[in-house]
Amino acid sequence: MNTPHPYKTISIIGLGYIGLPTAAVFASRKIQVIGVDVNQQAVDTINQGRIHIVEPDLDMVVQAAVTEGYLRATTTPEPAEAFLIAVPTPFKDGPSGPHHPDLDYIESAAKSIAPVIKKGDLVILESTSPVGATEQMAAWLAEARPDLTFPQTHGEDSDIRVAHCPERVLPGHVLRELVQNDRVIGGMTPKCSDAAVRLYKTFVLGQCVITNARTAEMCKLTENSFRDVNIAFANELSMICDKLNINVWELIKLANRHPRVNILQPGPGVGGHCIAVDPWFIVSAAPEESKIISTARIVNTKKPDWVIAKIFEGVDSFLNENPLINNDEVIIGCLGLTFKPDIDDLRQSPALEITEKVAKKHRGKVLTAEPNIIKLPSNLPLNISLNTIKELLQRAHILVLLVDHKEFKKMELPKQKIIIDTRGIWK
Ligand code: SAJ
Image 1 (cartoon, helix red, strand yellow):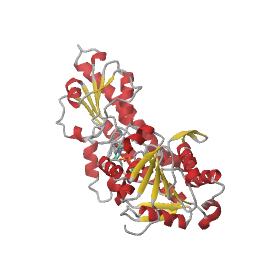
Image 2 (spheres, helix red, strand yellow; image 1 turned 45 degrees about the horizontal axis):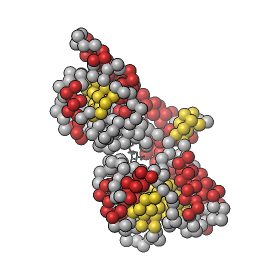
Image 3 (tube, rainbow, N blue to C red; image 1 turned 90 degrees about the horizontal axis):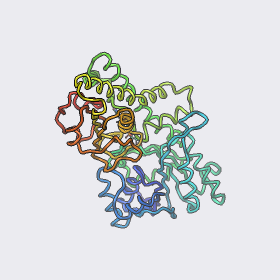
Image 4 (spheres, rainbow, N blue to C red; image 1 turned 90 degrees about the vertical axis):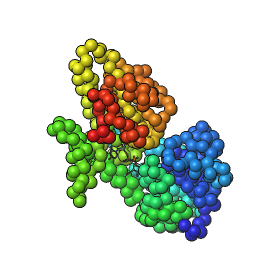
């Protein structure tokens, strides 16, 4: 922790779910951090010592870092000794199909820092990236700065060091995992790796394990694909068990008593910007060889449709039992919108997808309760409204549990006869 390091100022490009906590942790080690983001509102919020995302304890760390003068945000990159790029890597339509990696954010981040980098600087790509993205980023930097040398042409003698060090923290536990997790450090050369290790060792207590950039890229994709494949197995089991009239939660608990079995939990699908995206980066690079990985993606992507079918089966049986009620008077209550518990992140959320698709198909009202957001996203069907948990429980005829937020887990078994519990909290 106390090893001297040459980084007086670090710049983090992208102040989202990964960049902001990383910036705050560096700043908490009394290093000057310049955070850069294209979103002026996020920049203003951070400069007031506040945060624009939900992550436990992050508000306190950011407030302290800003108040003590170690963290400052801006929309324009400034000189620093190390640059960490933590921008999104979504997918787009491409030659290999609809899941082609989209490196546009990395490209514009690289081009935005190019004018301010100088000899001796370190540039790290933290964003989860397809294999080859770090080399591509170095190529963009070299193109913009022909006066500097880069590892792809000058190896160990290059002016600029370049590495890929994927973030691997779990939303909801980011501050702890940033410090405690091992870190994979993939330098474009061994000197690039050494420079990156010295940087991360300012706060990482886990091991910093060195490899090359391509292996580091593939390692991150592999970790998330491993989880996706295992969740797909659990999701497939849940559909099989439903057909065979077996309680899948009990089944998994029993099977997991075997010393070498560890099945994950079924749910309404897999969301977030990572696990629902990253496996496609492998599939798009090697489609013929990625059969299990692509099938798992399809199983998880289709799980929301299975849940929706269950909800409408529930509506039909409610109408059968209540012949005096019309279809458009049936109120469906959906608990949770985020992609996993106790966060505010709606990206690729199966809960949001289900709520939206149900509202499009259902002629009556759809109530949602989501304790982590204050306003529904725009463009949702007009029959969806955001309610308190109490209101929703009082009014809904059919209850759908989509996210296992702590507030829902505390609830007694609701009185509704028709409950679709996709997370097994009421088993
Ligand atoms: N899920 C299930 N059943 C489970 C576990 C998860 O349905 O048993 C669902 C969640 O509800 C959610 C989705 O999977 O919709 C993803 O949630 P998650 O908690 O598994 O993972 P993320 O996306 O929040 O974070 C993952 C982590 N990767 C791994 O655990 C291998 C994290 O360490 C990475 O840093 C992160 O992706 C990332 O940024 O890539």
